[in-house]
Length: 425
Image (cartoon, rainbow, N blue to C red):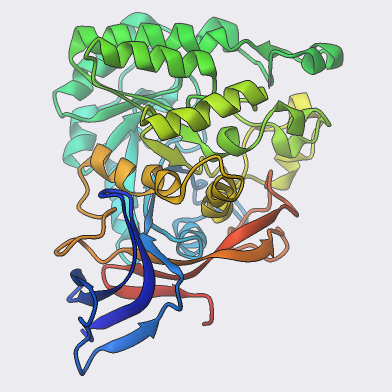
């Protein structure tokens, strides 16, 4: 394999806080050296011209559709969208349509993902069909290579069942991703509790639902010794509950969806079904609390929560529309928007997209150091562009970011030392 030296790059490594102009050399799929004057005579040289070079992104939550879905998102189409967006590692998450609740499904998906240009991990469904109180074979799915366990969007309503899930998963040291929603308060809700939602007569979810769910789940994690991942926190109450749990010494991590970090309830006030999401978009105070939690290290990972679906499922009145948005192609650009708005510095913005999720799953990628896998992304941090679903890479078009202007574009993505995406072709 030809060695590659990327020179004149702004090296940004969130794992160490490094941010400097230097060169990086790749050899045999690994980072061989970082510094000045490191190129060798037979290296392929790439001049970054001052562009940002960081670890490739790691997305802990993205969905595909069942194989029989006409025109649906497949592993292949999702992988193409991922590498065009700087993502080097994907976790395929279970959904009601595709619960990933049997060892054969985990093995099948892992096998199908082997030829893909992106590293692909599988998250197993915690209960059969993600419904009821019957546990899936978590141990067999762990043996089949499942990287973590999730209950999808619907919380485990029965406390005894959740205790059993956490206890079962703890024997395999798997993170259990639990959506922080009280089942009673969140049942069939479509928006956050607000004056606008009340005026429209929408069924609403109060923010206290998150706090109640996190307090319960954290107590069960303490009881069972399980590794609890709060799956897409969206409120100030939720952040405060996570902070309290950590102070008690509970092993608890947290993710946030890019939509809740960069959009708010005002975006949904026009009742455009594109903004019908789970969890719902919250108030601006909640959004700012999430940004502050990123900076404070209370949130470990930002996820795309990429949710592809047929437009017929979205072309309904707001309350009837299916929740979700394709979002992997706008994940990085939306995060960079927080940098341009001076809400986060660049290192803080990239950390929950790289080293944060890598540390959670014990992955060797997600950092720039000698000997680490050469999973890299080269970014023009200022390049303006407009996201349009007419020319997006995903197989679906249901986007909450349709026609939104961004600053910051992926120039090149490298996985395992090979260039898998180049904007210039």
